[in-house]
Picture 1 (tube, rainbow, N blue to C red):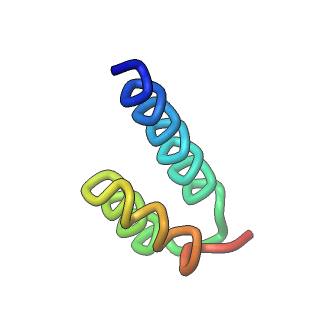
Picture 2 (cartoon, rainbow, N blue to C red):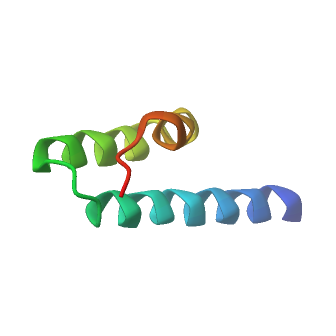
Length: 57
């Protein structure tokens, strides 16, 4: 049971990290909104897509 909690906490930290990095990127506002919605609605798939295709810089 503790392993599930730890994995959930790690997942939450990764999503928060991705949202913060997206907000601080130079992407357009529309792109930022789309990435954040994708991260919140599809956490695992959204995070993996963000790592591969997300805004850089």
